[in-house]
Structure formats: C-alpha cells, structure tokens
Length: 127
Image 1 (tube, rainbow, N blue to C red):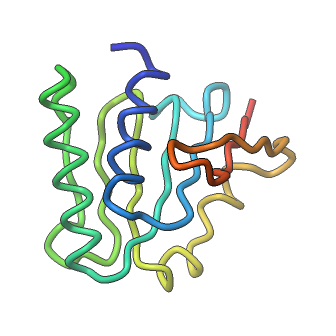
Image 2 (image 1 turned 90 degrees about the vertical axis):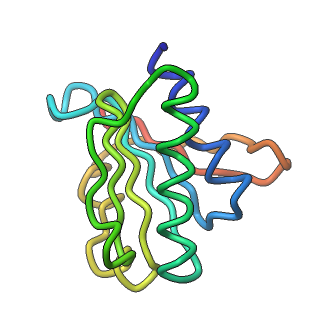
Image 3 (image 1 turned 120 degrees about the vertical axis):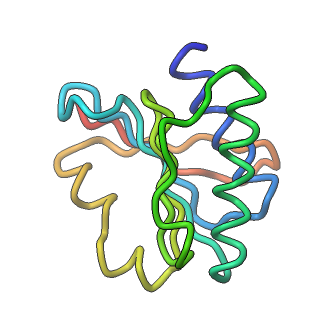
C-alpha cells in the first residue's frame, strides 16, 4: 500500500472514531524511522485504546500488519507502528506535555486540508 493511502486510512479511522485534533506530519528527510506521523487525541484511556486497536485492525485488513503497538496497557499514549506511518494516539494532557507536533514541525509550513466531514485538519510537511 502506498504511504499516502495508508495515511488516509489511519486518518479516516481516527476521524470515524471521533478522535480530536488529528494532525499528520510528513517527516521524510527528518528521520529514517517512518515517513508520516499521525497524531490524535482521545477522550479517555478507553477511547485511546479502542482507536489504536481499530487502526491496527483496519490496517491489517488492508494488508499492512502493524509492526507493533506500544502503550495499550495504560491507554494514555498508544503508538501504532505501521512502518511507513506511525500513529500516536494520546490523552490531551499527554499530548500537551510532549508536544510532538512542535518537535517535528519546527520551520515546517502548515497546510490545511478538509476532512471527510468538511472540517479542517492540520497537515505539516517537515521536509
């Protein structure tokens, strides 16, 4: 599956599950660990866990089995590693503390794109 299609699948699943503040960041050229990071917030630890499990399941159904899932025990921050796309799903307080968007988007232009429901989602290019 192409990187952009996998990113879109992850964003769509998170959007369908009512994730908040979904952001995708293109980190090609910044790191070799992945191409795109998707960051989203959940309402509770159960919501975060459920979204992570669903992202992993839907990716596997699409032919992209996750390399790993970390943090599902606690549910404050769950990382789903899909190799070329890494999803970080967190509680808002954890997201505010670590500020991954800021870390990976220093000097990156911010572009808006419309999500499926017509609302705006942030997209960064960290090249």
